[in-house]
Amino acid sequence: MQGIVVKLDRGYPLVETEDGVQYRCEHATSLVKGADVRAACGDRVEISVPEGHDKGIIEEVLPRRNAFVRKDPTERMEQQVLAANFDKVFVAEPCAQLNVRRLERELVLAHESRAEVFVLLTKADEAESAEALGRVRALVQRVANDARVLSVSAQDAASIEAVRACIAPGEVAILLGKSGVGKSSLVNMLVGDEVQATGAVREGDGKGRHTTVSREMVRIPGAGCVIDMPGVRGLALWDSDAGIDAAFSDVEELASACRFADCRHGAEPGCAVRAAVEDGRLAQERFDSYVRLRDEVQTAKKRVEEAKRIKSRTGHPRRWRG
Ligand code: GDP
Ligand code: ZN
Image (cartoon, rainbow, N blue to C red; front, side):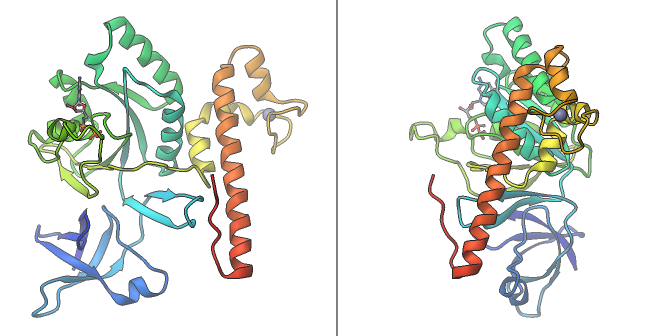
């Protein structure tokens, strides 16, 4: 039977088959032994349910259309797939505590999946005025480049409807963003139900603790599904060239006119990107962000290569400090 992994928590993956039946499943030993294949939320899997067994068995994880992968070169370099086979990525940033640097990184990671990217400017009601909101939105739109920017507020039902309209029936969206930006509240409003405990519920512990470690595909009435990605932090950029190219498609486009195909837009003659910065077609700030992220990826790649070399020599992974 084929099914989709609809929930991953501390227990066994929950798989829903085409006829709507859900099974807790374990991985077949052949999957976890060799390459250590683990199903992620959104994965299509082939399962069997042996007679007299209380659990199903995931026999195969079908090829992924795309994936959101935690790649962290500082942590033993193991990759972890956090979600698979989704169509849209919503990057949530709070309008009153917008962090442009963080948004830029989130956008690169979002684009890396090759899904369609949106920015949600959350808690729009916390903006000081309509003008202030407009200014933040304009800034965010510049950072977001081609991605659509939506402002949302729990106070404004129409803003939630606009998000719902972006997730067509049959589509899957993932929701990214720092803890506390209002992701669970948004999911609850999309669903019209308290499916996810929000910050309000756990107020009092004062620690901004993550509500849950589970990842679950939540069905939105009249729309598709959404997967909240709680506790996704410390997302390192590594091997994110495709994400940078997509997040900075404006820079890439200019770069196609550079004299050298491998121009680094530094001191090379005939650099079209620097020319665009000089005559104001490309904002200096945006160029700086591009260079910063590109160099960060470069450095991370070198570290990974180095760690691989050490590992192949000694058989031990080396943990990087800092
Ligand atoms: P998450 O950690 O991203 O899932 O964030 P939560 O949904 O748990 O929300 C964190 C806090 O922000 C809670 O206290 C919510 O009540 C509050 N919150 C969520 N959405 C909004 C909003 O649109 N406006 C305002 N003012 N507060 C919100
Ligand atoms: Zn150049």
